Amino acid sequence: MQRETPYLHDIGLEEAIQAWNVALDAAHASGTISSEMLPVAECLGRVTAAPVWARISSPHYHASAMDGYAVRAEDTAGATETMPKRLVLGVEATYVDTGDPLPAFANAVIMIEDTQLVGEGDETVVEIMAATPPWRHVRPMGEDIVATQLVLPSNHQLRPQDLGAAVGCGHTHLAVRRQPRVAIIPTGTELVSLNDPDSQERLQPGDIIEYNSIVLGAMAEEWGCVVSRFAPLPDDFDMIRSAVVSALAEHDLVVVNAGSSAGSEDFTARVVDSLGQV
Image 1 (tube, rainbow, N blue to C red):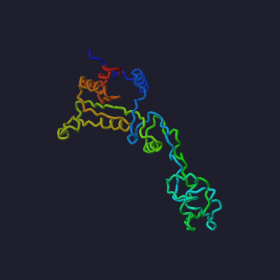
Image 2 (cartoon, rainbow, N blue to C red; image 1 turned 90 degrees about the horizontal axis):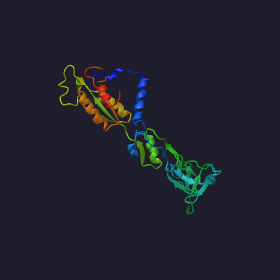
Image 3 (cartoon, one colour; image 1 turned 45 degrees about the horizontal axis):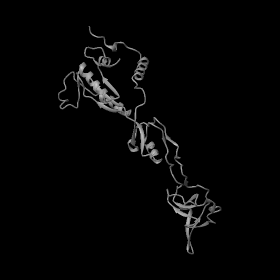
Image 4 (cartoon, one colour; image 1 turned 90 degrees about the vertical axis):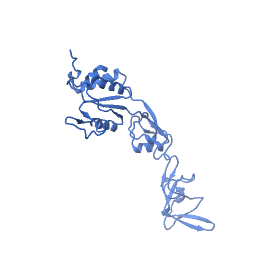
């Protein structure tokens, strides 16, 4: 007596999802996937396995935000175009480019457009045409990121700007989830792979070009998986079962495409039932 195909015992979607989750729990396969350390440059699109905390501040020093002169803001009080303040270059004012560290004595930067160099005896002075408040045109330490700050949470898919933030706060490597490994096994005696030599010339009526593995694989890769596409298999129980067993040894998920109905050459449900539970 032929064994009844398990597929015929149809259940609703919600019940199927619940049964799937129960089966994963029973197999201890419902936890988070293992992690690995990778260079930051290789982490685009990957998912963080742990929170990322800032090791250093960004910037890690008080930085000039303009080309000009670093000064004490209080030394510029009252400066106007008609009555400029004169500061001795190298003593009361220091030239800085954008990004340069602020000298220890300074707390502001005057843009070079608002100054004029004047020779005065053996000294060079900087004429300041406008007063400035403290910290104008300065990027204070930690303006973007403060050391010990949470930069990226766990289970976050990494974007280009996230990689920049991670490096900017002192990280060279990140702990990310290992990419799930997915095997896709297309089945059907009628399937023809265009990867076979002269396959297009040999197409016969009834032959079907196999492309579902391309579509399913691309979907899985879009979700961050590493995909293995198997060559199409004929409708043969033993061959399909052997391929599934082989794929299970090296993959987290095995997708068998087609063969799930109750026809005489539909073996997918029977293969699954022989290895577990449908």
